[in-house]
Image (cartoon, rainbow, N blue to C red; front, side, top):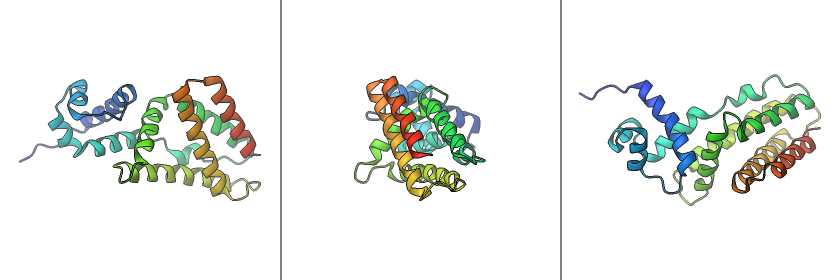
Length: 185
C-alpha cells in the first residue's frame, strides 16, 4: 500500500521550486539537480507531482495572488490606479517578485508549439484579465472593460519582462506609471 502524501512536505517543496527556478532558470530545468537542491530525490518529486511540468504548474498556482481580492471594492479611477501601481510594485520588488520572475519564464515557454505550459499560461492570463475586467466594470468611465484589462495586463507584463531583462528600474517604472495613468482616467 502506498504511503499517504505528506502535505506539509509538499507545500514546502512547492515554495522551494519557485525560488530555485527564479535563481537557476526554467530553460535547463532538470529534476535531478532540482531534487538535490531541495534535499529530496527526483523519484520523490515524481511521486508528489507526476511530471516536471505539473510540479511547476502547481508551484506557480500556490503563488498566484487572489486577483479578485486585489481589484475588489475599487469604485473610482484613482483607487484603481493606486491598486494597479501597488500591484506592479509588489510584482517587481515585493513579495510576488520571485514568482513573477518564474511566471514570465513559463509564459515564454508557453509560446512554443505544443508547449507543456500553454494551458496553465492561458488560464493564468484569463484569470488576471477577468479579475481586472470585473474591477473595471465598476467604473462607468471605462469603455470596453475587457479590452482595457487586456491592454493593462499585457502592457504591464511586457514592462515587467523588460525590467527583468534590462534591469532599468527607472525607465520601466515610468512606463508602468504612464500606462496605468493614461489607461485609467
